[in-house]
Amino acid sequence: MPISSGGNLYTRYDVRALIDAGGVDYLTPDVPKCGGHSDAIPIPSLASAFTLTVAPPPRLGAAPLSAARSPPPPPTP
Image 1 (cartoon, rainbow, N blue to C red):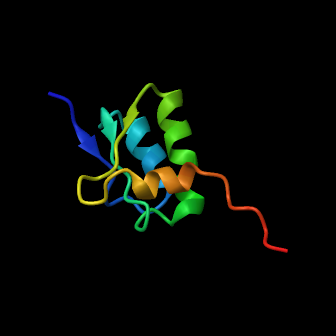
Image 2 (image 1 turned 180 degrees about the vertical axis):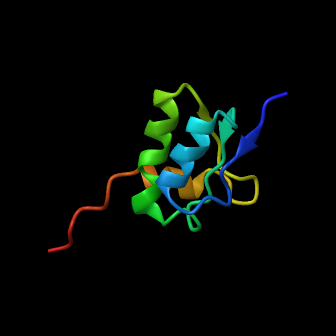
């Protein structure tokens, strides 16, 4: 049975430790808890390197994770 986890990890380093332990099939990072967008941006790339799937927690939907992967808006003049 596949296991998902990651919603209560607070940094990308915690996510890496979980991956290294081999304890997860799906990562479900919670963007506000994992250090905000700056720490959430590397998580999908990290998961991809280990052929894991990233899915947002059901209560959040895809918006926060998509926002973390989006480029910043252009500066205003």
